Image (tube, rainbow, N blue to C red; front, side, top):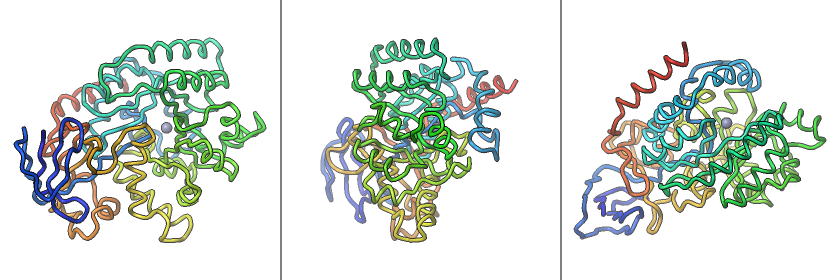
Length: 414
Ligand SMILES: [Zn+2]
């Protein structure tokens, strides 16, 4: 048991008892013999973040291909460099990404990348919640479709020892994947009781090309193909018409809002308030660093809030509590993880922040300070499932992780 003493929560100071992986008790004063007592004077507790869309191993591409639109960026800059990747590169790249996630307060991430074994191992070794997919991307080649299906089944059937990591499936997009692959992955996700993620309607070009090829818009098409539902996550979903918004709502499909990536690649802006008012399930992602260029959910919240207000020219869009919930609770909920709020019975996924940090003073509104003022320098401790991932700003093996990452970057740039 871990006892957090004198911690600031929801405008008052209290004690919090962590028993195994859960928040067991919250009270003004808790007197119990705990295994560890942490003095949290001048610290506040908040939920950690859930990043529902990223590509962890793209870390080596930070700063590559700037100022290009999504399709030129992918085809001219990203895909050729990714072709050099070997399976052994993925573990050090993913570990470095997870290091950045932990430092910026994230304890759960949904990934999408190749050579999945390395990311799976990195998530398990570093103790973070990883929603790790086998990624299907067949480029409409029948042989690759069959290979992807067989590999996906093999991936899902290999047992996992760590409950914090979930094996899921992912198809890259409707412009890189065949109908057969997408539908088969959707069936497999249902059969194996897991989740499916896909990039959807990220750009107007994707929508226009889809209409030209199939006669339907992407979400309409995916609805007809039977892939939508509460266990499906659409990344981006920037360009939806009113009919598609209703389809997303009626099926309970979750969206991953990636405001920085969408703005940076000139893809457009997700109409956050319109989707929220329509009752859509919104979560938040950073996308990979190649299009962000960081994995900080704190930065993502600020941009989401400001761009929501700007879109509708109203300060009532993108309210503080709504944005914080999208970045935390909504993401966990999308994957059936009981976290995202500091309350008794929830999983102990949380961050401690330093209330003497320059960005958090004065403490008139902590969530507002986190969204609009703070950077990750205010985070001192990160806990996931009741275990410390970072204590007093120290993450074990950090120097080794950085050295390994630099070696891989050198290798890939040769
Ligand atoms: Zn993406």
